[in-house]
Image (cartoon, rainbow, N blue to C red; front, side, top):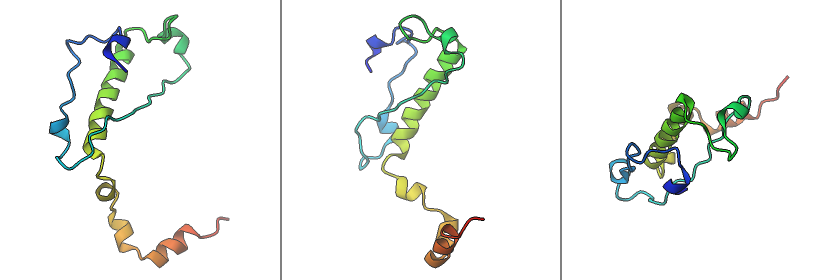
Length: 106
């Protein structure tokens, strides 16, 4: 999405993401694609006729979360194997994992 499609965003306060501060030289550099879903119960109060959120503390928090999610995505991309390497899974044998996962439920 382009900044001109976000009329409620003040460019003065939206800093570019410093990819070099988050990603190593050997890591993927394609832009992350994110989908943020907004809960519906109060949607009629929070959106205008064009479907844009009204400026509010909630709006700013949604922007905060999106900004943090982009940074986190950049930092963790390409590191899934390391981040999901778990002690409990290394300790437990493959046979034990199979027994535990495949046990019948009552």
